[in-house]
Length: 351
Ligand code: TXA
Ligand code: MG
Image (cartoon, rainbow, N blue to C red; front, side):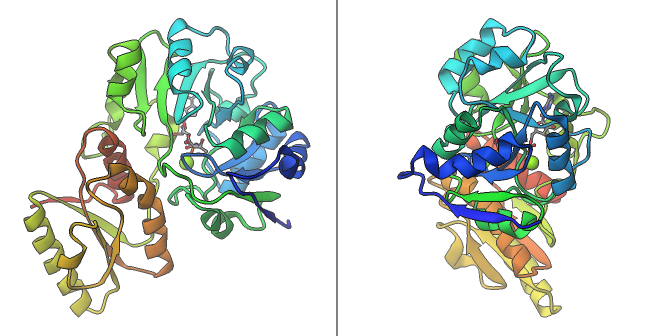
Protein backbone atom coordinates (compact mmCIF):
# COMPACT_ATOMS: atom_id res chain seq x y z
CA UNK A 1 0.00 0.00 0.00
CA UNK A 2 1.21 3.49 -0.77
CA UNK A 3 1.12 5.84 2.21
CA UNK A 4 0.57 9.49 1.43
CA UNK A 5 2.18 12.01 3.78
CA UNK A 6 0.67 15.48 4.12
CA UNK A 7 2.21 18.26 6.19
CA UNK A 8 -0.27 20.43 8.06
CA UNK A 9 0.66 23.54 10.02
CA UNK A 10 -1.35 23.35 13.26
CA UNK A 11 -1.47 27.12 13.61
CA UNK A 12 -2.29 27.85 10.04
CA UNK A 13 -4.51 25.48 8.09
CA UNK A 14 -7.96 25.44 6.58
CA UNK A 15 -10.49 22.62 6.79
CA UNK A 16 -10.02 21.96 3.04
CA UNK A 17 -6.47 20.78 3.74
CA UNK A 18 -8.02 17.82 5.53
CA UNK A 19 -10.56 16.84 2.85
CA UNK A 20 -8.58 13.95 1.45
CA UNK A 21 -7.90 12.52 4.92
CA UNK A 22 -11.57 12.87 5.86
CA UNK A 23 -12.58 11.05 2.65
CA UNK A 24 -10.28 8.17 3.51
CA UNK A 25 -11.83 7.82 6.97
CA UNK A 26 -15.37 7.96 5.54
CA UNK A 27 -14.45 5.24 3.05
CA UNK A 28 -13.09 2.83 5.65
CA UNK A 29 -9.36 3.62 5.32
CA UNK A 30 -6.63 4.42 7.85
CA UNK A 31 -5.22 7.88 8.61
CA UNK A 32 -2.57 8.67 11.24
CA UNK A 33 -3.05 12.12 12.74
CA UNK A 34 -1.55 14.25 15.52
CA UNK A 35 -3.24 14.69 18.87
CA UNK A 36 -1.98 16.65 21.87
CA UNK A 37 -0.93 13.39 23.59
CA UNK A 38 0.56 11.12 20.90
CA UNK A 39 -0.18 10.43 17.22
CA UNK A 40 -3.30 8.32 16.67
CA UNK A 41 -4.08 5.78 13.94
CA UNK A 42 -7.65 6.55 12.95
CA UNK A 43 -10.47 4.59 11.31
CA UNK A 44 -14.26 4.78 11.29
CA UNK A 45 -15.18 3.41 14.74
CA UNK A 46 -18.64 2.27 13.64
CA UNK A 47 -17.30 0.20 10.73
CA UNK A 48 -16.06 -3.16 12.00
CA UNK A 49 -13.99 -3.82 8.87
CA UNK A 50 -12.21 -0.48 9.28
CA UNK A 51 -11.49 -1.23 12.94
CA UNK A 52 -10.03 -4.61 11.99
CA UNK A 53 -7.60 -2.86 9.66
CA UNK A 54 -6.18 -0.93 12.65
CA UNK A 55 -5.37 -4.16 14.51
CA UNK A 56 -3.73 -5.58 11.41
CA UNK A 57 -1.60 -2.50 10.65
CA UNK A 58 -0.35 -2.25 14.26
CA UNK A 59 -0.03 -5.97 14.95
CA UNK A 60 -2.31 -5.33 17.93
CA UNK A 61 -3.93 -8.16 19.92
CA UNK A 62 -7.65 -8.21 19.06
CA UNK A 63 -8.73 -8.13 22.73
CA UNK A 64 -7.22 -4.68 23.23
CA UNK A 65 -10.02 -2.13 22.69
CA UNK A 66 -9.69 1.18 20.85
CA UNK A 67 -10.50 4.70 22.06
CA UNK A 68 -13.28 6.38 20.07
CA UNK A 69 -12.46 10.03 19.32
CA UNK A 70 -15.28 12.51 18.92
CA UNK A 71 -15.44 16.18 17.93
CA UNK A 72 -18.43 17.32 19.99
CA UNK A 73 -19.39 16.51 23.56
CA UNK A 74 -22.94 15.50 22.57
CA UNK A 75 -21.53 12.68 20.42
CA UNK A 76 -20.93 10.81 23.66
CA UNK A 77 -24.71 10.30 23.93
CA UNK A 78 -24.85 8.51 20.59
CA UNK A 79 -22.24 5.95 21.63
CA UNK A 80 -23.31 5.00 25.14
CA UNK A 81 -26.38 3.66 26.94
CA UNK A 82 -26.51 6.44 29.46
CA UNK A 83 -24.25 9.35 30.29
CA UNK A 84 -23.87 9.63 34.07
CA UNK A 85 -23.73 13.07 35.60
CA UNK A 86 -20.06 12.56 36.53
CA UNK A 87 -19.16 12.08 32.88
CA UNK A 88 -20.70 15.43 31.96
CA UNK A 89 -18.80 17.11 34.77
CA UNK A 90 -15.45 15.65 33.71
CA UNK A 91 -16.13 16.38 30.06
CA UNK A 92 -17.02 19.97 30.79
CA UNK A 93 -13.78 20.57 32.66
CA UNK A 94 -11.27 18.44 30.74
CA UNK A 95 -12.58 18.23 27.16
CA UNK A 96 -11.24 18.98 24.68
CA UNK A 97 -8.16 17.41 26.21
CA UNK A 98 -6.14 14.38 27.33
CA UNK A 99 -8.92 12.52 29.17
CA UNK A 100 -10.59 9.29 28.07
CA UNK A 101 -13.89 8.26 29.68
CA UNK A 102 -15.17 4.67 29.73
CA UNK A 103 -18.92 4.06 29.73
CA UNK A 104 -21.38 1.26 28.91
CA UNK A 105 -21.59 1.08 25.12
CA UNK A 106 -24.65 1.06 22.89
CA UNK A 107 -25.31 -2.07 20.84
CA UNK A 108 -24.41 -0.17 17.67
CA UNK A 109 -20.72 0.24 18.63
CA UNK A 110 -18.98 -2.75 17.01
CA UNK A 111 -17.28 -5.37 19.18
CA UNK A 112 -14.23 -5.06 16.93
CA UNK A 113 -13.81 -1.51 18.21
CA UNK A 114 -14.26 -2.39 21.89
CA UNK A 115 -12.27 -5.61 21.88
CA UNK A 116 -15.43 -7.54 22.74
CA UNK A 117 -16.14 -5.47 25.89
CA UNK A 118 -19.58 -4.02 26.64
CA UNK A 119 -17.98 -0.65 27.40
CA UNK A 120 -16.52 2.00 25.12
CA UNK A 121 -13.67 4.46 25.70
CA UNK A 122 -14.35 8.01 24.47
CA UNK A 123 -12.10 11.04 24.08
CA UNK A 124 -12.52 14.54 22.63
CA UNK A 125 -8.97 15.61 21.72
CA UNK A 126 -7.70 19.18 22.00
CA UNK A 127 -5.43 19.19 18.96
CA UNK A 128 -7.09 21.31 16.27
CA UNK A 129 -6.08 19.09 13.37
CA UNK A 130 -7.55 16.06 15.15
CA UNK A 131 -10.81 17.82 15.93
CA UNK A 132 -11.26 19.29 12.46
CA UNK A 133 -10.50 15.93 10.88
CA UNK A 134 -13.07 14.08 12.99
CA UNK A 135 -15.64 16.79 12.39
CA UNK A 136 -15.06 16.91 8.64
CA UNK A 137 -15.10 13.13 8.22
CA UNK A 138 -18.53 12.92 9.83
CA UNK A 139 -17.57 9.65 11.53
CA UNK A 140 -16.43 8.75 15.04
CA UNK A 141 -12.76 7.92 14.87
CA UNK A 142 -11.33 4.85 16.62
CA UNK A 143 -7.65 5.61 17.22
CA UNK A 144 -5.00 3.81 19.18
CA UNK A 145 -1.51 5.24 19.30
CA UNK A 146 -0.02 5.08 15.79
CA UNK A 147 2.89 2.77 16.59
CA UNK A 148 3.60 -0.90 15.97
CA UNK A 149 2.25 -2.70 19.05
CA UNK A 150 4.80 -2.85 21.86
CA UNK A 151 6.95 0.06 20.62
CA UNK A 152 7.03 3.47 22.30
CA UNK A 153 4.07 5.63 21.26
CA UNK A 154 4.78 8.11 18.45
CA UNK A 155 5.14 11.76 19.40
CA UNK A 156 6.34 12.92 15.95
CA UNK A 157 5.27 12.11 12.40
CA UNK A 158 8.68 10.55 11.70
CA UNK A 159 7.96 7.95 14.42
CA UNK A 160 4.74 7.02 12.59
CA UNK A 161 6.58 6.93 9.27
CA UNK A 162 9.17 4.54 10.76
CA UNK A 163 6.49 2.18 12.07
CA UNK A 164 3.60 2.30 9.63
CA UNK A 165 4.84 3.45 6.21
CA UNK A 166 3.27 1.20 3.56
CA UNK A 167 0.70 -0.19 6.01
CA UNK A 168 -1.80 2.70 6.13
CA UNK A 169 -3.35 5.15 3.65
CA UNK A 170 -2.19 8.48 4.99
CA UNK A 171 -0.08 10.23 7.60
CA UNK A 172 -0.88 13.82 8.60
CA UNK A 173 2.32 15.44 9.80
CA UNK A 174 1.28 18.10 12.30
CA UNK A 175 4.59 18.46 14.14
CA UNK A 176 5.34 17.37 17.68
CA UNK A 177 2.68 16.05 20.02
CA UNK A 178 2.89 18.62 22.79
CA UNK A 179 2.15 16.47 25.87
CA UNK A 180 3.90 13.28 24.81
CA UNK A 181 2.09 10.80 27.07
CA UNK A 182 -1.21 9.07 26.34
CA UNK A 183 -4.45 10.33 27.89
CA UNK A 184 -5.58 9.61 31.43
CA UNK A 185 -8.24 6.87 31.32
CA UNK A 186 -11.14 7.05 33.78
CA UNK A 187 -13.67 4.24 34.04
CA UNK A 188 -17.17 5.44 34.92
CA UNK A 189 -18.96 2.29 33.77
CA UNK A 190 -19.40 0.78 37.22
CA UNK A 191 -20.61 3.42 39.64
CA UNK A 192 -17.30 3.80 41.48
CA UNK A 193 -14.95 5.86 39.24
CA UNK A 194 -11.45 4.45 38.70
CA UNK A 195 -8.23 5.55 36.97
CA UNK A 196 -7.15 2.80 34.57
CA UNK A 197 -4.15 4.65 33.10
CA UNK A 198 -2.37 7.68 34.60
CA UNK A 199 -1.76 10.66 32.34
CA UNK A 200 -1.34 14.42 32.36
CA UNK A 201 -4.72 14.88 34.02
CA UNK A 202 -3.83 13.76 37.51
CA UNK A 203 -5.75 12.04 40.29
CA UNK A 204 -5.83 15.34 42.17
CA UNK A 205 -7.25 17.25 39.20
CA UNK A 206 -9.97 14.62 38.80
CA UNK A 207 -10.80 14.60 42.51
CA UNK A 208 -11.29 18.36 42.44
CA UNK A 209 -14.16 17.77 40.03
CA UNK A 210 -15.79 14.46 41.03
CA UNK A 211 -14.45 13.63 44.50
CA UNK A 212 -12.48 10.53 45.53
CA UNK A 213 -11.16 8.35 42.72
CA UNK A 214 -8.81 5.36 43.10
CA UNK A 215 -6.29 3.82 40.72
CA UNK A 216 -6.96 0.37 39.30
CA UNK A 217 -5.05 -1.74 41.89
CA UNK A 218 -3.43 -3.69 39.05
CA UNK A 219 -1.44 -0.66 37.85
CA UNK A 220 0.02 0.70 41.07
CA UNK A 221 3.35 -0.32 42.51
CA UNK A 222 6.86 -0.76 41.20
CA UNK A 223 6.44 -4.33 40.00
CA UNK A 224 3.86 -5.85 37.70
CA UNK A 225 1.10 -7.41 39.72
CA UNK A 226 0.50 -10.72 37.98
CA UNK A 227 -2.35 -11.72 40.27
CA UNK A 228 -4.79 -9.02 39.22
CA UNK A 229 -5.79 -8.28 35.66
CA UNK A 230 -5.74 -4.57 34.72
CA UNK A 231 -9.15 -3.24 33.68
CA UNK A 232 -7.63 -1.57 30.62
CA UNK A 233 -6.51 -4.61 28.61
CA UNK A 234 -3.68 -2.59 27.03
CA UNK A 235 -2.01 -2.09 30.40
CA UNK A 236 -1.13 -5.77 30.63
CA UNK A 237 1.06 -5.87 27.56
CA UNK A 238 4.79 -5.22 27.51
CA UNK A 239 4.68 -1.75 26.14
CA UNK A 240 6.54 1.40 25.35
CA UNK A 241 9.64 -0.74 25.23
CA UNK A 242 12.91 0.18 23.52
CA UNK A 243 14.98 -2.62 21.98
CA UNK A 244 17.88 -2.21 24.40
CA UNK A 245 17.78 -3.18 28.05
CA UNK A 246 16.56 -0.20 30.08
CA UNK A 247 17.33 0.17 33.80
CA UNK A 248 16.00 2.88 36.11
CA UNK A 249 18.10 4.10 39.02
CA UNK A 250 16.31 5.64 41.96
CA UNK A 251 17.60 7.37 45.10
CA UNK A 252 19.59 10.44 46.09
CA UNK A 253 20.59 12.11 42.80
CA UNK A 254 24.36 12.04 43.52
CA UNK A 255 24.18 8.32 44.28
CA UNK A 256 22.13 7.74 41.15
CA UNK A 257 24.72 9.54 39.00
CA UNK A 258 27.55 7.51 40.56
CA UNK A 259 25.73 4.21 40.09
CA UNK A 260 24.89 5.00 36.47
CA UNK A 261 28.45 6.10 35.74
CA UNK A 262 29.82 2.90 37.18
CA UNK A 263 27.37 0.62 35.32
CA UNK A 264 27.93 2.56 32.10
CA UNK A 265 31.71 2.42 32.47
CA UNK A 266 31.67 -1.33 32.86
CA UNK A 267 29.32 -1.91 29.92
CA UNK A 268 31.35 0.42 27.69
CA UNK A 269 34.55 -1.37 28.63
CA UNK A 270 32.87 -4.66 27.71
CA UNK A 271 32.27 -3.24 24.26
CA UNK A 272 28.55 -2.54 24.58
CA UNK A 273 26.68 0.43 23.19
CA UNK A 274 25.41 2.46 26.14
CA UNK A 275 22.86 5.28 26.27
CA UNK A 276 22.11 7.48 29.26
CA UNK A 277 18.92 9.45 29.83
CA UNK A 278 19.90 12.58 31.74
CA UNK A 279 18.23 15.86 32.62
CA UNK A 280 19.35 19.45 32.04
CA UNK A 281 20.47 19.53 35.66
CA UNK A 282 22.59 16.35 35.53
CA UNK A 283 23.82 15.99 31.94
CA UNK A 284 27.36 17.25 32.66
CA UNK A 285 27.99 14.64 35.33
CA UNK A 286 27.93 11.57 33.09
CA UNK A 287 31.21 10.41 31.58
CA UNK A 288 30.46 7.22 29.64
CA UNK A 289 28.19 6.20 26.79
CA UNK A 290 26.00 8.53 24.77
CA UNK A 291 24.23 11.02 27.03
CA UNK A 292 20.88 12.45 25.93
CA UNK A 293 18.87 15.02 27.82
CA UNK A 294 15.16 14.31 28.25
CA UNK A 295 14.13 17.66 29.73
CA UNK A 296 14.45 19.73 32.86
CA UNK A 297 13.60 18.57 36.38
CA UNK A 298 12.12 22.02 36.93
CA UNK A 299 9.59 21.35 34.19
CA UNK A 300 8.00 17.91 34.46
CA UNK A 301 6.03 18.52 31.27
CA UNK A 302 9.28 18.68 29.30
CA UNK A 303 10.22 15.24 30.62
CA UNK A 304 6.84 13.77 29.68
CA UNK A 305 7.12 15.32 26.22
CA UNK A 306 10.62 13.96 25.62
CA UNK A 307 10.33 10.40 26.93
CA UNK A 308 9.15 8.41 23.92
CA UNK A 309 11.32 10.29 21.44
CA UNK A 310 14.46 9.56 23.45
CA UNK A 311 13.60 5.84 23.70
CA UNK A 312 13.13 5.75 19.94
CA UNK A 313 16.37 7.68 19.35
CA UNK A 314 18.28 5.09 21.36
CA UNK A 315 16.64 2.32 19.30
CA UNK A 316 17.84 3.94 16.10
CA UNK A 317 21.34 4.08 17.55
CA UNK A 318 21.07 0.38 18.51
CA UNK A 319 21.93 1.02 22.14
CA UNK A 320 22.21 -2.26 24.02
CA UNK A 321 22.03 -0.82 27.53
CA UNK A 322 20.13 2.29 28.52
CA UNK A 323 20.29 3.83 31.99
CA UNK A 324 17.93 6.45 33.31
CA UNK A 325 17.35 8.49 36.43
CA UNK A 326 13.92 8.13 38.02
CA UNK A 327 11.43 10.93 38.50
CA UNK A 328 9.16 12.10 41.29
CA UNK A 329 5.85 10.29 41.45
CA UNK A 330 3.49 13.13 42.11
CA UNK A 331 1.42 14.97 39.49
CA UNK A 332 2.73 14.20 35.96
CA UNK A 333 5.45 12.10 37.56
CA UNK A 334 2.95 9.32 38.21
CA UNK A 335 2.33 8.97 34.49
CA UNK A 336 6.01 9.32 33.58
CA UNK A 337 7.09 6.62 36.02
CA UNK A 338 4.24 4.33 34.95
CA UNK A 339 5.52 4.42 31.35
CA UNK A 340 9.19 4.29 32.32
CA UNK A 341 8.72 1.24 34.56
CA UNK A 342 6.90 -0.60 31.80
CA UNK A 343 9.53 0.37 29.26
CA UNK A 344 12.18 -0.98 31.64
CA UNK A 345 10.30 -4.23 32.22
CA UNK A 346 10.30 -3.05 35.88
CA UNK A 347 14.12 -3.13 36.16
CA UNK A 348 14.52 -0.60 38.95
CA UNK A 349 17.65 -0.30 41.08
CA UNK A 350 17.38 1.50 44.40
CA UNK A 351 20.71 3.08 45.31
O1 TXA B 1 -3.87 9.75 24.30
C1 TXA B 1 -4.44 8.72 23.88
O2 TXA B 1 -5.31 8.14 24.54
C2 TXA B 1 -3.99 8.18 22.52
C3 TXA B 1 -4.42 9.19 21.46
C4 TXA B 1 -4.20 8.69 20.07
O3 TXA B 1 -5.75 9.56 21.67
N1 TXA B 1 -4.56 6.90 22.28
C5 TXA B 1 -4.15 5.78 22.93
O4 TXA B 1 -4.75 4.60 22.51
O5 TXA B 1 -3.31 5.78 23.79
P1 TXA B 1 -4.18 3.16 22.81
O6 TXA B 1 -5.02 2.25 22.01
O7 TXA B 1 -2.74 3.14 22.59
O8 TXA B 1 -4.52 2.94 24.32
C6 TXA B 1 -5.87 2.75 24.67
C7 TXA B 1 -5.95 2.12 26.03
C8 TXA B 1 -5.56 0.66 26.02
O9 TXA B 1 -4.82 0.36 27.18
C9 TXA B 1 -6.91 -0.05 26.05
O10 TXA B 1 -6.82 -1.32 26.62
C10 TXA B 1 -7.74 0.91 26.87
O11 TXA B 1 -7.31 2.17 26.43
N2 TXA B 1 -9.18 0.81 26.60
C11 TXA B 1 -9.84 1.15 25.46
N3 TXA B 1 -11.15 0.88 25.57
C12 TXA B 1 -11.34 0.36 26.80
C13 TXA B 1 -12.48 -0.14 27.51
N4 TXA B 1 -13.69 -0.16 26.97
N5 TXA B 1 -12.27 -0.62 28.77
C14 TXA B 1 -11.05 -0.60 29.35
N6 TXA B 1 -9.93 -0.14 28.71
C15 TXA B 1 -10.08 0.32 27.46
MG1 MG C 1 -0.84 2.52 22.59
